[in-house]
Image 1 (tube, rainbow, N blue to C red):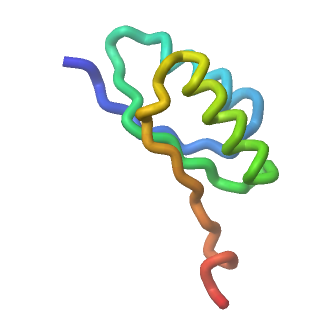
Image 2: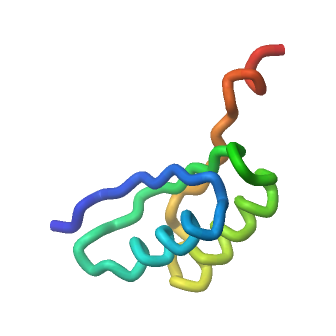
Length: 74
């Protein structure tokens, strides 16, 4: 049975490479990715994340954005 992984990253190149690595591992199943706008612009980071999912034929993996605390408070 594969290890289920929920990945959270900030869209930096090291995180995108980590996502790609996880997608190639036969003993894991990526069940979701959240992108946190820590050191990135959220929209390009989401696009890059989804493009990697498409490249690996894993479009069914859930993709979401995480809001930082100051973004939740109105």
